[in-house]
Amino acid sequence: MSAATETVALRRPAPRPLARVAGFVRAHALTAFAILAFVYLMLPIAVVVLFSFNDPIGRFNFTWQGFSLDAWRHPFAYPGLGEAVRVSLEIAAISSAVATVLGTLIALALVRYRFRGRGATNLLIFLPMATPEIVMGASLLTLFLNLGVQLGLGTIILAHIMFNISYVVVTVKARLVGFDRHLEEAAMDLYANQMTTFRKVTLPLIAPALLAGALIAFSLSIDDFVITYLVSGAQTTFPLFVWGSARVAVPPQINVIGTMIFGVAIVLMLANVIYQRRRGAAA
Amino acid sequence: MNVFHRHRWLTPYLLLAPGLAFLAVFFLVPTYYLGNTSLQSGDLFDGYVFTWAWENYRNAISGYDAQFTRSLEYAAIATVVAFLISYPLAYWIAFRGGRWKNLLLLLIIAPFFVTYLIRTLAWQIILTNDGFVVHTLRTLHLLGSDGHLLASSLAVVAGITYNFLPFMALPLYVSLEQIDHRLIEAAEDLYANRVKAFVRVTFPLSLPGVFAGTLLTFIPAAGDFINAQLLGTPRQYMIGNVIQSKFKVIADYPEAAALSFILMAAILVMILLYTRLIGTEKLTG
Image (cartoon, rainbow over the protein chains, first blue to last red):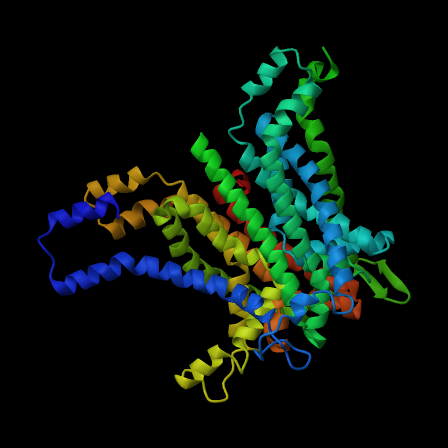
């Protein structure tokens, strides 16, 4: 309870029972609302996990039939699913690596230098995040169509790098603020050259920021549907596989893969939260 | 010393060059081709050629004005509902979260880690006719005995609200978290009651988050087609559904490009109005 409420309580005589109930409701209404909101946010996630253990009758996994571990025992038993997941991981790995390098360089320039064209740079970084995916996908598709570029794995990777750059810049930039430049100057004073300073001092210092950017890019890439769908040609990825099966058959294996991706992401994010707290405690 | 030292002013541009060049080629140039394609005519077999075919825009507006209006309507309602849910939630985390703030934030973005299509399919399971929710509502007579939730505007708007809610909650949290608590205490010392302190101090200070959140929710919501496709029927289709089917099913590229261009122009006008009010630096963080 905040100091402000205590002052209010002191100023008034002992409240009547009814007023106390009203006071209790007022004090806890917000907490109750927050709990309800969290239930709402978690509900679909719980459903996804629960239905990965379903034993569906027929082609659709929409009603609860009974507990089964089949889908978890054979997560790739559904034709085409394993290949789609493999392709998605490959696209995410390549596009997040490239986007992290390009985005980190931009973030370094924005945080550490004053230069002309800063506003224009910020705008160019912001625009892809403020454009609906369908418009970005449509523009890329018209580019590829007009230039006669073969649609497929290559065009998907190019698209993913493009939409990932902005998110990497924003993430890395947020982590780089407060970076102590004196450490680099100290290294230079001790006769380290530019390259050595970057490798031995700068890189280890910005590594957590880089990792955070790469994680965001990886998860955005593995989840992307709209842009991928438009520029994919005949290539399938995991989200495209889900889209195709939503009309004909939804096997519980899809929920298993969804749960796995969710689990890995949450573990990594939790590790990040704990790491930050440790660092905060140490400082 | 070396070349870096002699031309220090060049360093930021060298750092920017590769990334910005990539964005120019794969974000700005495609916009030109989108505009170019939207003015082409012809057909898929003989090929489309640029002919200043402005009638594509006329057809787009006259043929799909219902879907355009519906997109903006659904997106606006979803943005308002997401705001009403997110603001108290973000407020609670920022002011009462204590040492659990980061963990609670993780809960807010947790839905993002479930593949978009899979979490929308989960809403299909939740809202299905044989499900718990419809059953309860029927028992309470809030829904007729043959009433349903799926395949309705309500389901589509609810899906959009859920899917884009973290985009609203995060910027709200960031702006609420930065507020100096002493300002609110000062207001209360000056005999403002809690409501007045909120209206006159807390809320105005959180406005940057409100602007960023509404933008980041409204924009993807207006272009969405997955919720309408999976939770609605053709009667709930939005402009995104039309664009994707024109590209992927009918292969009417010029018409699809014209529709995309109109959607983008409408949204760009909105962004410009917003950035006039708050500046880009605040939005990109």
